Image 1 (cartoon, helix red, strand yellow):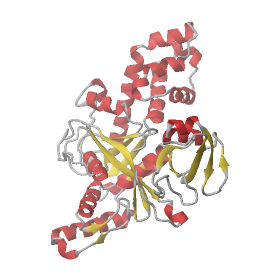
Image 2 (cartoon, rainbow, N blue to C red):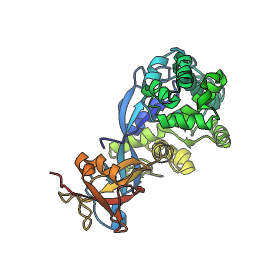
Image 3 (cartoon, one colour):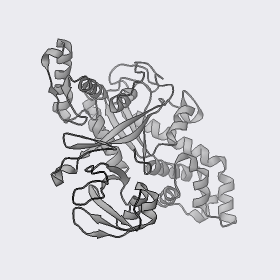
Image 4 (cartoon, helix red, strand yellow):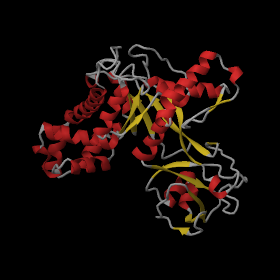
Length: 407
């Protein structure tokens, strides 16, 4: 995987919502999956993929991927996922596995909150009658737990921080950034959160508890942006709840992680032809499937794929990285005529980087010397030179010219 600009995606939710099934279907990593709370005792790490049309089709060449995969004209680029222990009310105070949850979530750059859309699990993850639980309350409670956790960290030293800032004229943004550095909350996050909260940084000693709650809510949204994976979409109680989520303007993807896991495992065993994110699958050889397996696949097609166009797992990963984290794909090449590296491999690497990355910053990502000796870059699409401050765009193919060749 690329050595820099990586973003860690946390898979979160209360126990027994299908969170670990989502993680397993996205990574095919072996994890414990069962219908009782706290199956996930410790976090599981794995590699998933984001999917994007491969640029080789545009240039009508055959590629030789090295750091990623190319399947049926789609480039699959590896990303880091972590399946975080289930959260219950009071987690910020250490209840349940709250301490484990918060220790892991601090490193995540974005979150996918796997919610049981059917309402079949109560607030602590125990099974209940379908529709008995409100999934919207599950979303609100998780947001609240993270807010209270951040608030508790700020309030430990708040009187000191606010006094030093106001009386000694120290930069409040730096003071808070230092206090929250372990939570992957940056100075820019803090600047934007204070501004959007309408607070005066020069009068922080006057901020109330409500002011601080408003601040941490904004900090959470900026530093831990969240996508809702509306899971168990194939169950009858889920449809009305999905409509409610849309009405409340949540960033949501309807999802059946169980269906995706079945399809991924069937494809792994060569029983079907299926690439994650496809709107359908093709049975490779009917005689290799038992009648029960064949019926299960037909049911997935009818209840999930035909209704939504996907199982939602791949769509959730794509949306998290491309829309929530605003990442783009850039392909570096050395030979612009053949779109290859120095060993002749065509489009060997695809890099997932944040929008706003400049040509020179990208050069540093590939190799330190390339960044230090950067002259300019050339776009394969336009043949134009790009200066060091040129902002790269999604699906760019560029060659970087420097004063010193590597190797």
